[in-house]
Length: 292
Image (tube, rainbow, N blue to C red; front, top):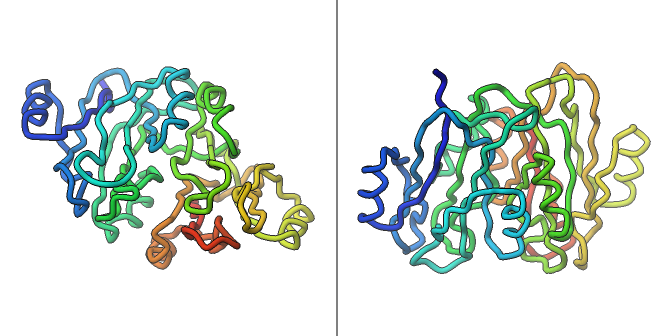
C-alpha cells in the first residue's frame, strides 16, 4: 500500500519532541529557528494512507480566515517561538481530485547552498522564510508529490476577501507578500496544479512599466489583473502568462527574496525573472523564478 505524508507537527522543546516520537512521528533535521536566538524548533511528520495535499504558512491574522473556512488544520505552535519576528504557523489540508496531488516527502533547508538543486528532483519550495523578520538563517519547507505536477492556473489578490474561495477551489497561495516592506495592500500570488502537462502554463512574464505591458499584450500573453505593487509609490507590476500546449510546461514557481541566490537558481535550470516585484520602492527586492 502506498503511504503518504499524512500528518505534520512541530516541537518547541524536548518534552514535545519525546511526545511526538512516542506517537510515531519522524523528526526532520534542521532547526526552524536556526541562528535566530529562539527555541530549537523541529518539524515532524507521520506517514499513512490518507495524504496531506497542501501545506500553507501564515504570518499575520488576515491570512488565517480563508484557511479556517476552507477546512485547513492549524498547527498552533509559533515557529518563531523565543525569537523576535513574526508569529508563523503551519496549516495542512487533505484534499482529493485533479488539483490535489498527495505529498510523499517533506524536507527543510537551513543552508541556502542546498536550495536550488532540489527543483530538479521534483521538490517544491514554500515561499515563506520561517525566520521571517527574526534574522538568522533562511529556512524553507519543501514538499515532493507522488506525481509530477504542473502549474495550470495563476492569479493574485490584493486583499484577503477571496481567500476562502480560492482555497476552496484548490489554489495554493505563495505565502509571501509581493509588497513586503513597501506598505500598500497585502498582495499574494496564487496558483493551481495539475498532473496533466497539456493543461499547464507555457510561459510567465513580469511587466514593470507600460511599455513592457503593451509588448506582452501584443505577444498574446494574458494578464493577471492585480498590481503586485498595489497602493505603493512604486511601479505598476503585473504578471502575464501563456496557457497553451508546450514541450516545456511550467512545473514550479518560486518567489526569491534572497536575491543573492539568483545565479545559483539559474545554474540549477530555473528562469530568474530579474524584474523586482517591488520596483520603484525602497523596500525588499523580490524576483519570480520559473522551473520548466
